[in-house]
Length: 549
Image (cartoon, rainbow, N blue to C red):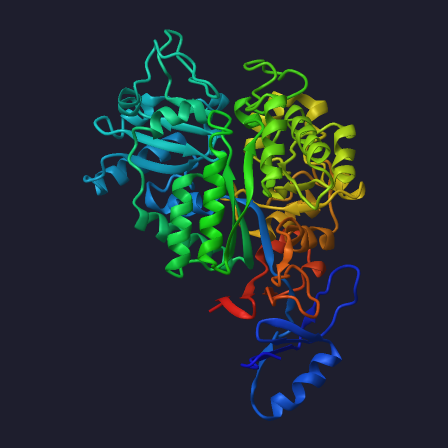
């Protein structure tokens, strides 16, 4: 017991120790660490309870489990969505235009109107016209990000300021969709094109960005999350995180994945090492910078996801590899040698193969190590490549909420992939059955940050309306306990939980008391009811970061 001797005894509920263990009815936490479970917890706390020095937490029949982690997200972007027009809830182009008009009128001082994130399925093929936004704001530039964060929609003024016109060549790692006369339509895809606009768009202030992180991590705490992987961190973002940590604005643990851009690598590697040094020098218990992020490809919805066989709709043939296979292997090997964990975005089956090849190359060149390399998304992969995850020990960090027949899937994805490939998407159960490490993430704000929503889809493969009956690709549904583990202990494995005496992700003696208290046992309700289960409290090292009213 530490010097303070602060004790919490959780009783009168179900304490879930994982599928390999029996449930318990009580848990003792001493100074933020799990001290005992079951009858031993009651016995150890008895003397302290008599003296009145233990806090009794009545679970009221609820369910106590390891807190959730988010293995792939963008919390800064999520928090910044509050800073512009509220277009996320809009269900038509007219609604988006009306909201942009309203916001612009309410903010006459704003030099640019910047917002996120609109539904890319609202326009045919995800192509949005600048002239639609011109109707709302003709005299100031407007830039809206799509849900996928790989696409933006701008008005004519923004195109003008960015110098994008009919004569503008197609950028490296980007695309400028055009009208029949060659003029830019107003939709920009991937970094190479988007950067043309962001280069002339004023950045948010440091205070705005720190406030956004505070809102984002508080949002995660309300959802039962205590650790988040920020999967896209650029140099200015490091400053934001350091300042947010110094100001005490973080409500969750955060690990930074520093972006490796093929246009600037390997020249950017020294800056990554310096960013990691600055984070380590700060020594904040909630902030680390262990990872490097790579984009192997784009996304299926705009046909930049890299496929082994051509797209059915044929706009981009096989899609886009962000790195050549050789350059990706060299870069992953370099950051691995520098002690970073590789975290690779790979959507299409060609990208997944390149990512696996790169990790295997690093293993061969640098030698065996506990590297816990991550491939995020894994929307589509061949059977042979799925088997390689287990053999190489590569963690598949997947977004279960995407494995449903929503509008994005039915309007944009399925027509592009065709029937055979569509039926192989998000092979979570196959990976788990092969023995591959499986972790879950939300990719928030691309999709909801709520783990319970993702878990509901993982076990049902249905929409919120229960469609289709029996689930979409039901052979890939998971058991509820496997899904709970993927969003807790699975993410903890990805996070190297256990380094520096900060073990979390499972309930065992000596681990940090990172816990979430649910009002009901998710194993006892229908999948459709799982998202409605209330979060009663979230604990990070025994300290409540959220309590329900």
